[in-house]
Image (tube, rainbow, N blue to C red; front, side, top):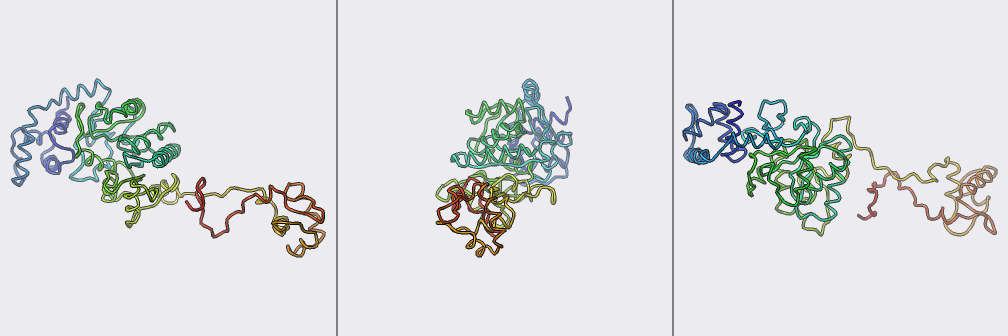
Length: 397
């Protein structure tokens, strides 16, 4: 067994993830030297520590007695997992942006290559007590991003996280779950089936050895890994106090893109998102193209403008359309009246009337021509300077 790998396995068992002191010692004497410092309870030569830090070193020394890194590695292998350390081909170098708070190692389970998966990745996180609107948005965004070749990263929690993972997998796309517990501990228990499917098709990520149970601090600490693995984070629903907002804070600190989906103004799960949207630097997104434009490469991933529906009258040539638009909404009109209003010669009007009648736009009336019921019901296209409306939402949504 590689001594450095075994040392990192032990360190991940005795210290909380991302401890700045432990990373400082690792930088100073390496993983094996750090394990020896923990074993003796004394800092390595040449490294000054405060009294508070020395107490932490003593705490790790006591915990090391119960650590069993060889057993952890054996259980990991039995479950088809692996330990990935800095410098390994699968180690995502974006984690190094965390500096003194980077992971010591990662315990992975699942066939997907973590580093490769995260080259084009977006985090989607949000409220555990999500609304049906939020669940729908998260799943749709994840599925559409997966269809476009992007990996969805989230935290495996109830609500928005689970919806994002499921949406990506429904589109046969890769997804990464960063857990606050060992990858063999199904938490929350209701997501056990989701985790099993991810272990079969994607990848589960943990900073803690197998068998580790979660506690509150680790949920907040793991958010830094979610932010670091992704090019940007999308927040879909968040209350005033929310772990999702903590992820956004880490993303901003790491110079990643912060995006948010607007929610219902009457919902408490929108309070945090709307507060985030009022902060400088947050990008409002409503569809996957806008997410890709925000995190993609300049000039390659621009979001296309929303397209309005193409109506039958849009396919008419300009002269024929001008004759059609000269018709009154109610009543009838004769050729002379239409010619005057459209500014078109009478012979041209007579020719266009035949075309419009054949197309079902107009019909004969007792004293001329009139619009058909279908033509009256056809919606008018928006003015050129109108604000585009998202398909499926009413104009005042």
